[in-house]
Length: 170
Image 1 (cartoon, one colour):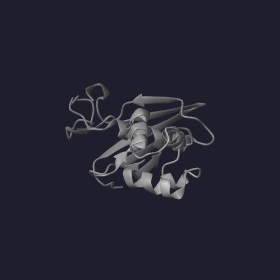
Image 2 (cartoon, rainbow, N blue to C red):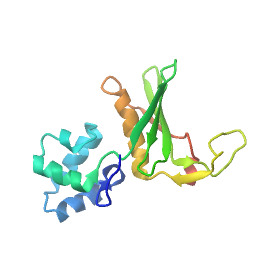
Image 3 (cartoon, one colour):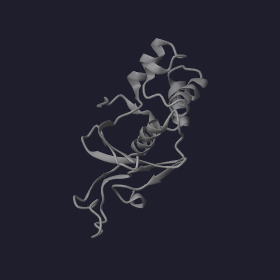
């Protein structure tokens, strides 16, 4: 999914910054919380689903914001129920995120980088070197993608920074 230069990644934006945007566009302050509730509590991934917002408001928001910037290009499920997603970002780089299910626990393992600069001999993550750090919004988007795999039956219990990339270098 591509998004234009005049659009911003909602998942990489704080509630305070989104509240400022609302104020700059003459929207009441509660609209920011309302949109964030739709995204973070109800888990919607597009403005069309926000049924208590007017159609013109949803269209205006979609002109300025995008909720998801990545596209799922592969999904693999292991015999133990583990699910791995490969997401492609607008600049055509990819990252993986994983859902690990154990009894009543659901853990999202998310990547923080595309590639890895460390080059540990026992790990294949660094073979191509570091391509780039993932943004905060891209990391949140991974967690939200994994969360959607769990719902409505289970909740996501844990988020672990791992996978491709060395989390503490980002």
